[in-house]
Image 1 (cartoon, rainbow, N blue to C red):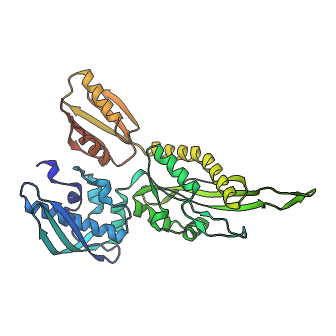
Image 2 (cartoon, rainbow, N blue to C red):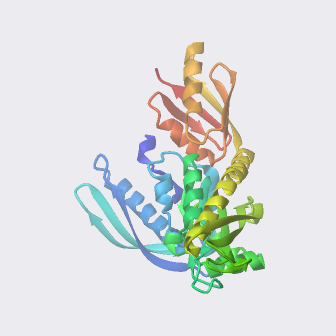
Image 3 (cartoon, rainbow, N blue to C red):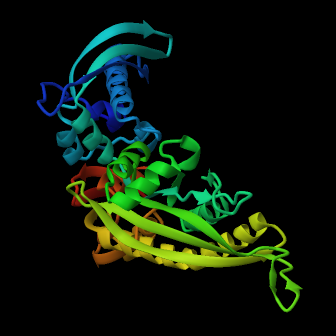
Length: 377
C-alpha cells in the first residue's frame, strides 16, 4: 500500500475505540477535511473523520498551536504514539458529510477523554520548542507600582537569540494563555500546573518563565548632597526566572533558576528601566543558550540508520552528508558501509519524515530505534 495514502493523522486514529475511566469525557463538535485521491471516496472520508477527531482532541486540550501543523504531511507513524492515544476518543458520531469535487468535509460529535488527550498532545511536543513568558513591571509615576508589560525589551531580545540558534520559540504573551499574576503565583508557590498546561497548549517541552521588577535608586533632580542634584534617574532592574521541562512521566523538572540584574541611567524612569532590561538580556543570552543546548544534547536519542543500495564509499559519504544536514540532528557516526548512528533530540518520527522528504532516500521500515532506508541514485 502506498505510504502517501495513509496520512499520519488518519493512522493515529485507526484504533480509537473503547472507553476510559480516567475522567468524564468531553463531547465536542469538530470538522475535518481530506482530499479525494484517485476517486477513492471511502479513504478520503476515513481521513476526514480522523482529522475531525483530532480537531476535537485539540479543542479538549485547548492547543494554541495546532498539532496538525507539526505533523502535517507526515507519511509515517510512531507506534508508541499510536498506543499512547488509543482510547482518547471514547465514542463519536458522524453528524454531516459534504462531498465536493475534490474534497470531503465531515462534521462529528466526538467524546474525548481529557487526561489521555493531554498525553496524546504531549507526545507530539518538540524538545527544541521553547515557550517564553517574561512579563516586566512597567514603571509607574510613583515608582512603586505599574502594570506588567508582557512583551518587552528582554523577552523580545531573548526570543531573537533563541530563534537565531534554530530553536522553535513560542511567545506566550500575545496568546493571553497566562497572565503575570498567575505566573508570579506559580513561581512563589511551586505549583506548576498552570505552566504544565502551557506546554500542552504550545506543544513545547521547555518553558522559560519569570518576572521583572525594578527599583528607582535615585530620581532625576533629587539632591545627593553638597548642593548637587541628580541629573538622571538611576534604576535597578531585577529578573527572577526558571527554565523548566518535563521528565517522561510528566513531572516538572527545573533545568535552571536564578536572578539577574541590570542598571540604567536616563532622563526618564522608563528609559533607564529599558537600559536595565538590555543589560539583563546581554547577561542572560549566553546562559540561556548554554542551558538549553545542554538539555537538547542530553535528551538526544541514538537511532540506528541502515541504508540499502550503497555499493561505493562515495555513496555512503553522500548519505552521511544528507543526514548531517537534517534539522535537529546533533551528530552522525558512520559504523560501516551504509550504516550510521544518528543522535537526534526529538521523537524519531520527525527524523524518519525528514529523511523521507529527500528525493534519493526512501524509508522502507521504521521503529523508534531503527530506520531502514533505500538509497536511490
